[in-house]
Amino acid sequence: MERYQKSRALLERARGSLTGGVSSPFRAKMTAPLYFQDARGPRLWDVDGNEYIDYTLSWGPLILGQRHPALVEAMRQAADRPHTYGAQHELEIEVAEKFQRAVPCAERVCFTSSGSEAVQLALRLARAATGRNLILRFEGHYHGWLDSVLISYRASLDQMGPLDHPHKVPGSKGQTPESLASVVVCDWNDLGAVERAFAEHPGQIAAVITEPVLCNSGSLMPRAGFLEGLRRVTAAHGALLIFDEVITGFRMALGGAQQYFGVTPDVATFGKAVAGGVTLSAIAGRRDVMELIMTGGVAFGGTFNGNPLSLAAANATLDELAKGDGAALRHANQMGLKLMEGVRCAARDCGIPVQVTGFGACFHIHFTELPALRNYRDTHQDNKPRLEQYLREALDEGLWLLPEGRIYVSAAHTEREVEETLGIIRRIFARLA
Ligand SMILES: Cc1ncc(COP(=O)(O)O)c(C=O)c1O
Image (spheres, rainbow, N blue to C red):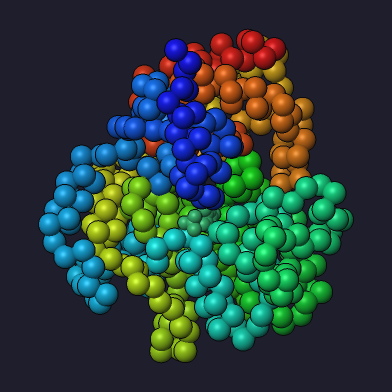
């Protein structure tokens, strides 16, 4: 029987009713026509009964793996209590206090339903706090799909223009052209470029927003001193520094990238892992900035913000992650580092040029001849046909991977998954060589 027979039939059916988004032909087009029916811990089963080790973790949230018992129990209890009040309740405070204990910048916290919304709030707060309009953002960074930030994210080399003055490339048809006018685009990992942008737009830049690790375009690490430099330059120019920790938050370390690198932004956005796979995002930041919400005239809302079901999941997730002084994240990152090293060894043994970048619990395999990758433009040197062949073969061998080479590792992955995975990757690399 064909390995993806039932999945292919479902894909045909989906074409008759669904468009766009993750649970649809859009997703299927990216890797394979795959439909799932079950998942537990770090493993998934598709409708044809094929088993996979999961390195997508639903694009990041499943930091404890699927159906962690503590999360399941918290959700069971929450299901038996009121599902939403549209008003305050104690769990909001409890989860916000856990943020404060873990995250250096979290003097105040507020909850949203998606990372995209959290980013919009952060930008609005920055503009309100500074009375300025421009947001400086970097090439290749993803901050959600909304008009104001979906700029120069997946731009092609011929669209991007000169490195010292990149073009602003819209990310979607139908996007308001005015959104481009409120943004300055810079090369990432180059402090000189940021200093130049501030000099060219004196008194106009409200904030610099950055993924502290460029997870969305190759899991590239910041150069030594770059984040510190951003902190210094933004402070000197009276602009805010926003870390978009939607991926790094509750993954890189309990206190996010800001704790890992020892650089505290004014505001940070969180999402994905915060509720272990349940819908919740958040923003955290300086008290004077955050308190502009309502009392400072900054409007913000959302019907499901801070709903008890999501917060019960966050409460359980943050408790699990805090145990043993962050043991779960240490484990996830350790497993990831083993995988990274194993992939490098396999590539060396097979003579395949590869760079493995990232930080353990989120990393990236680049089939590239480059000796190192610094920015988004460098990722365009990746050998795409080789990546696609690797992804196809990995799927057939039981690895469920993201379509661009990124790998997420959870606290549920064990030495067994690591060994099994490296065995598969070694076999694939030997065939690719
Ligand atoms: C760094 C970053 N910021 C923001 C977002 C948007 O979050 P959401 O998909 O929850 O809207 C994402 C989503 O992948 C992200 O990776």
